[in-house]
Image 1: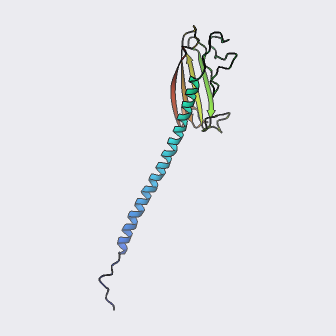
Image 2 (image 1 turned 90 degrees about the vertical axis):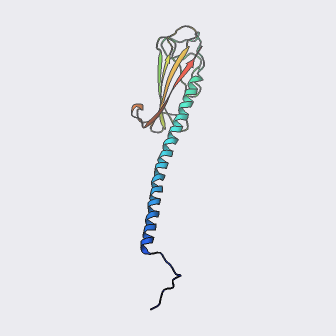
Image 3 (image 1 turned 45 degrees about the horizontal axis):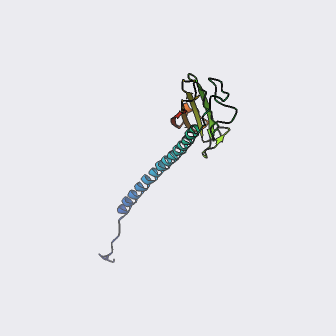
Amino acid sequence: MKKRNPSTRAFSLVELSVALGVIVFCLLTIIGLLAVGITSTHSSTVQTSATNILTAVSSDLEAIPNVTPNDPVIKGTVAQPAHNSGSPIYGLFLPAGGAGATSTYKFYVGDNGLTNSSAAAAFCQVNIWVTASSTNTAPVHQETFAHVLVSWPAAAQYTNAQGYVENVVAINRT
């Protein structure tokens, strides 16, 4: 029988099993955190897209030109005069002056920011409630408030949405 050389050393099976167990535990933890990170990244991407759409709609509302009292607008109706004075991107109109005159809009927007005709092809749903001030003297719009709510997915009602962002836009028309 040969004697072992004392300078030759090796790991025992128990040591190898423990080392492999530690490595597997670390890898499983990293893989689990990777799934959480991917979900978090997707959620923040969706919320960022919705916030960008909210900003675009709010800016579009603020870009609506003033409607002068000479335009043919019936008190308490949506201000759609003979010439096009709606918002430049989404074609929104402010309500004519009068106590509590309101307009309500609902449309679907894709992740590119363009409107879609159906919820199936859209990224989110945009709901807008516009309320004019209680004045009906010139100028027609003094203070107008728009509550803009962007919710996703587009097919769900905003009350049952997976997520939403909202903003209140104060439009001064003096």
